Image 1 (spheres, one colour):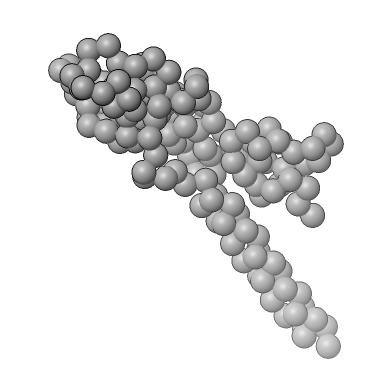
Image 2 (cartoon, helix red, strand yellow):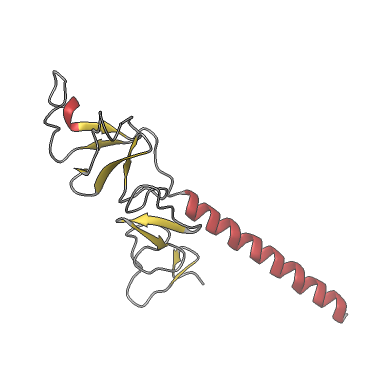
Length: 151
């Protein structure tokens, strides 16, 4: 009788652990960026050879750049101040939200961290960034496994 209860408890704890891992995986995967994202520049580029002012004020995510010759995204503010574009390895990257270039080119965030406002931030237990950047839990509610008030 005691051994069957022990086996049941072990199975239940294993199932519970798997469910927690799946919940964390779903929470973390929902923060993936869209590849079709465009950055609307706060100030249009001055020396951009285009006939359209609109084309000079939009840069597609991952646009090609060259830090020496064609640097279209060197410290350019975008999306009403929520993005800051730099040329990282020949591509425009938002260093305020790119987990592979967080705060500066080449600075990678660890597992379970996201790049929130240019800082690698633990989104698993941070009440100000619970599950994703800038998702705040209600006062007095804890953030556990990327979910506010997880029981």
